[in-house]
Image (cartoon, rainbow over all chains, first blue to last red; front, side, top):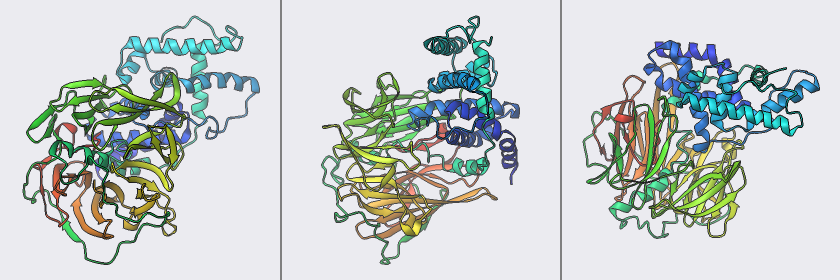
Length: 175
Length: 423
């Protein structure tokens, strides 16, 4: 195999599990997540020789994955998320904890793709607002406002349940 | 008491942690797919439908595209296996070498080169094209639908679809909808978009191809069916939420939707009566993914089955409905070399008339008014020495270059034909 193929193989082997996890958070479906990773890696392989800094591969892949996912709808590849059938098995937790998680997860699953991407990059990938802005090609202000909207939506969801302040504090705002 | 940020972080980590390891061969598939870039994203481009529209500027004498009189190649009947190729008349076989092909006339249909769509002496500049981006265009009655996007440039994460005049003047920027398909006369578009504020709702729209004005809209169920082409006055829509997808016909006059028997996920139409679609494999092809041609006017009879031709993908059907252009590819993972072969099959005589090899890819086959076939030819055998040209072949196997061949692996230096999505 060529150096390019060896490099690419090594990268995929090292990162594919992490990529599938992030993709799952973006798509909410295991099968779709693997499809998204595949599409992302195909694009990445096409551009491999143009990615000068190997340290920048993760950023490139992340950017490509988010853009690819966002464009699925526009490109008619958007699939309606399957609500329960393909979710991974959950660990055995107490019913109360499970209820809490579902509320947050249910909210994440209803967010539009770019807002959902911001939530995943901010709260799972732990990227800074500037890094997220670079990934999505938007301003830091947009990242902040979208994050605030997601947080507000979660608060509203809890408020609808009649427990507006028992589970969340209000001190955090934009990312 | 957890903060909202902590709730998000905890929930996301828990769900991510539940995702087990994947055993998919991502790298190998990436090799293969990288060489077949078009496959997953070409579906809405409507290449064959474009083959009708592209003839509009150059006259319709040969193809008579403004009428519905198509050559009906097969008798109407019930669903049955596609006719097997007959043993008559050995097909002409040609092997192309882009360095040795003679140079012929420029394409007689619109084509793209270096930021400009060209059609005879008329040129339409396309703004916003960047290296690393993507571009698709299809002709309409008075210009083009053009989508320009960028896949990797920071700040260009979204694409833009516009209706432009034949001189390149932007008439309208389209909303976020699927890439439009174009009617045979180029005067109508069809697309799918969101239905109101419902995130999972879908609306189908018929749109004036010149002004972009929505003429009719219908909300449909949220499975997100999207148009793949016109079939006369009807619009073929397909959805792929399920594994295999389904195809239906939407009648904009009545908003009735009916299922196409035997069709799974569809790719395009020839603008007349033929649907290019994935089909259930015949018993002898069990386990294969098969693409075929279905005659809507003939009770959904299968006219051609790519699995009879080494699993060929059906790329285009001539506007008169007589000839099928299919392609097959083989990948050698060790050498990273692919080889492609195109077959042109005569549905009327039920035989292969031409086989073309020697190239890596045959993209966006487009029929010229005189019956010749154009395609974007990629000749590189690895990722370091790509070569690109538009080639022309007659059904008798006489081939030539419609553009010069040049080395390039990026959009800015590539030639494109209508419907081909680069990116």
